[in-house]
View 1 (cartoon, each protein chain N blue to C red):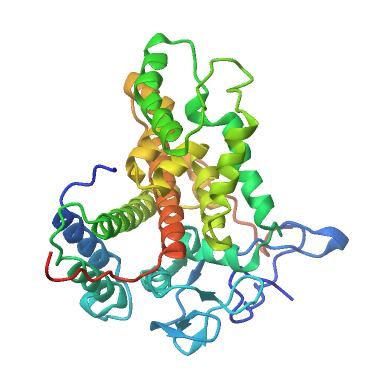
View 2 (cartoon, each protein chain N blue to C red):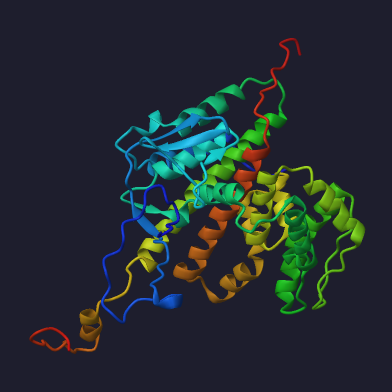
Amino acid sequence: LLRGRFPLVCLPRPPPVAAGSGPVGPGGGRTYAPPAERKRFYQNVSISQGEGGYEINLDHRKLKTPQAKLFTVPTEALAIAVATEWDSQKDTIKFYTMHLTTLCNTALDNPTQRNKMQLIRAAVKFLDTDTICYRVEEPAALAELQKNEWDPIVAWAEKRYNVTIGSSTSILGPNISASTKETFISHLASYNMWALQGIEYVITQLKSLILSMGLIDRHITVEKAVLLSRLEEEYQIQRWGNVEWAHDYDLCELRARAAAGTLFVHLCSESSSVKHKLLQD
Amino acid sequence: MAVLGSPLRTLRALLRELRQASGGAGRPYRDTPAYRHILAAFRNHRVTSEKLCRAQQELHFQAATYLCLLRSVREHAALHQEYHGKGERSPEEVAGLVGFRLPQQPGGKG
C-alpha cells in the first residue's frame, strides 16, 4: 500500500519505470518519496464542526492526516486559516508551503511520540545553546551588533520571567542555572499540548528559546525575531552582498515558518471571548 | 510591546494578501471564510474607549503575524518558482549545452 503524504484517496500507482533506474528499497522493491506537489483535485474548501472539533472538507471529502486520522482542529479561526491554505493552492498543491496544515498534522499524529514533559524539556534544552546568548569575540563589528541587538531581548526575558540568563563568548555557551530552567519548564507547562508543539517548532526554527518567548509574549514581531535570529547572516550580507536565490529564499522560508508557528500557538491557546465593556466608563 | 504600526494598514495589507491568495474555484475573495472572519474580528474590537486595549493589541498582533505568513509564503513560492522550479534538464538539453547531439539509434538504446 503506497502511503502518500495526504492519503485521502489512494495515490495511483506511478507508471512502471525502466529496469535499472529509480531508487531501490530493501528486498528489491521500489520506494518512492511522496510527491512534493500534487494536482489540485478539489473545487471547494469548507469547514464544518464535528464531534472532535472543526473539520476541513475538500469538496465532499473530509481531510485526513498522514496517519489517516480525521483532521480536526480545536478552534474555528485555526480551521479557517487551514482551509485558506488549501484554497489558495492553484493548479498544483504545494505541500511545502502549507505550514499550518503541517503543524496540525504533527499535533494530531504526534509522529515523534513525545509526551508533554518530553516536549517541554526539548524546548528548554535549547536555552543551553540559545542563539542570542552565544556571542562572538570577533569581528568586533559583529560582536558590537550582537551586544546592541541581543542584550535588550535577554534583559527583557530576565525581567519578564525573573531569571538570570546572561550571555557568553565561551565555546560551551552560557551557563544556565537549574532554577532558570525550572522557571521556563513550569511556564511552558501552562500551555496545552497543541500550543506546545507550536512553541517547540518555533524554537527549532529560530534556534532560540528567548526569541520564541519574545514572539509568543508579543514582545517582538515575526520580522524582528527572524532578523535577530539571522543577525550574523544579515551582518555578512551587509558586508558581502545579498544573493537572492539563497538569502532571500531562506529569509522568506524562515519568516513563513516562524509566523505559522506563532499564529498556531496563539490560535490554539486563545479564548475567543470579547469582553464587552460596560457603557458607563 | 511589539512595534506594529497602524491597525488599518495591517488590515488593508492582509486583505490584499487574501485577494492574491485566492486561487480557488473562481469564488470572489470577499466570499471566503477568512475574509469574513478577519473583518468581523476587526469590527468587534473597534469599539473601545481604552487606548491600550489588550484584546485589540492581541488581535492586531495576530493579524500582523498572519499577514507575515501569507506574504512570506507567497514570496517564498515565487522565489522557488524562479530559481528552483525548473527541474532537471533532459539528456538532450544537457548534450546541447556543450554543442553535442545525442545519437539516433534505430530500435532504441541497446
